[in-house]
Length: 160
Image 1 (cartoon, one colour):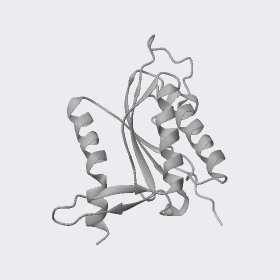
Image 2 (cartoon, one colour):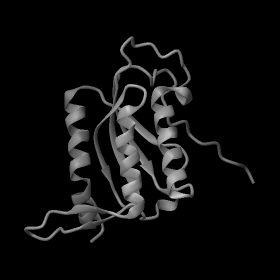
Image 3 (cartoon, rainbow, N blue to C red):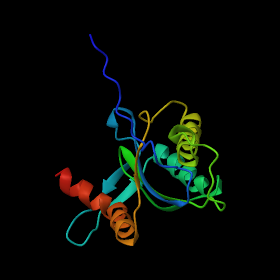
Image 4 (spheres, rainbow, N blue to C red):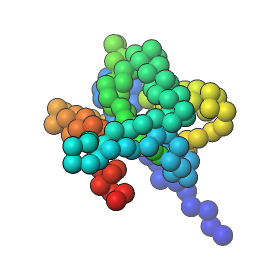
């Protein structure tokens, strides 16, 4: 049987350590719904996330990203089987010294985040890799910010 090679997720020519905003999605292994429940959704009751114990540990480590490598979490949402992060990298001098996308500030930040979560939870919970989108301007930023805010509403509508 022929083994398929995975499609590279990072843009080869882009420096992921450069200053900028990134929209990141990280999924739970096998898309298990272990991070939260979406509650509400009635006419007067907007859907909100109710974190599980696992979700609370994940949130703790999302908030700790703000202390690492000049990376700030601008916005995030924890969903039942994935998370979305809007990350700002403020590498003041604009140089990375790490041309490889797999050794960039972004990749190191996500890898460290996953490692800390897995350690505290006591088992690996994340799928391999992550998806990212380089934010390209104010309109793109606002669309992704709104997407994060509205993700619980979309979840309820998609899972009726």
